[in-house]
Amino acid sequence: MRKQVQLFGGVQMVHIQWKDRYNIDYKEIDAQHKVLLDLLNELIDLAGGSGHPEQITGIFHRLYEYVLTHFSTEEGYMRACNYPRLAEHEALHASFIQKMVELNNAFDPEDPHLLDETLDFIKTWYIDHILKADLDYAPTLKHYHSEAPIRAVLFDFDNVLCAFDQAKFLEGLAKLCGVQAKDLEGRLFHDSTLTQDYERGELNSDGFLAGVAALFGADLPEEAFIQAYTDGFSPTPAMFDLVQRIKRRYRVGLIANTTPWHFDHVITKTDIFSVFDSVSLSYEVGAIKPDPRLFEDALHKLDLMAEECLYIDDRPAFAQSATEHLLHGITYTTPIALMAELRRHKVTF
Image: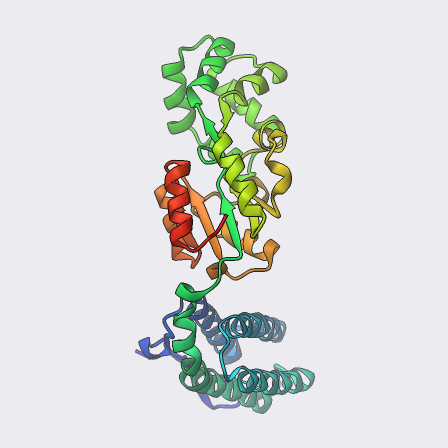
């Protein structure tokens, strides 16, 4: 059932319900259209009497700001895929923004007639714009994912650029704790969330060390613990060489679920670190893969579209997550297999 709310002026406004026909079948654009719809419906609810004037003003400004973000995204995609009617679409966006500026300058959440005019304009634009202008560029955009030129290659770190032997860390920790290594693994990685919290940045290094010490009831000297914690990494020379060769033609980036100690004591010390154009770290972003925020952080830093980037990870689920978010995800097994995959994607090196 469609939800109706009563506006101050006595005119009923109806929620816009998302319909399949609004889909242009392009993940990011459809997702943004749904956010715009949520904001519009929230404005309708607040205007219907459930919100104070300052709340109504706040959601109107949020809607306006998100429209600008959405238009920028759309125009970026249309420009990248050489949409022939880009100028017309940009003119539609400019006209809408101008009207929104006029409404914003005159906006009074306590004026029912102005509120009616604002909501009616946005609702009409929303439906007409999606069903006409946006659906017109959809066929061109749908071809873009397979046709977009690769401009950057992004790499995971553990077990891609450097092999990681977790057993070495557990052996070193066992000596410090006086607990057998086989007992440490389950208690640290399965029965507690210390490592995940540290990777997300929810714990700092001192907090992580204190948590591990408390978990095993041991006094853990920081220097000795860091030595054990950062042991087990060994470079993969063939991958270092490949990254250097790729760098000659493409931008390269690092996307890693990692921690401050691994970053400071291992990653930055590798010969390959200096070549990266962007570095996206889980503890800085506040999310761990497969959370898309890590991919979004890399794309923002590189100022590239997802379709223009390859992402390489030894974890199939993480490579798949990249693909679901419109990058080209590749599961790493060996350097030789990776080179074959890169050639399949027309990456030269």
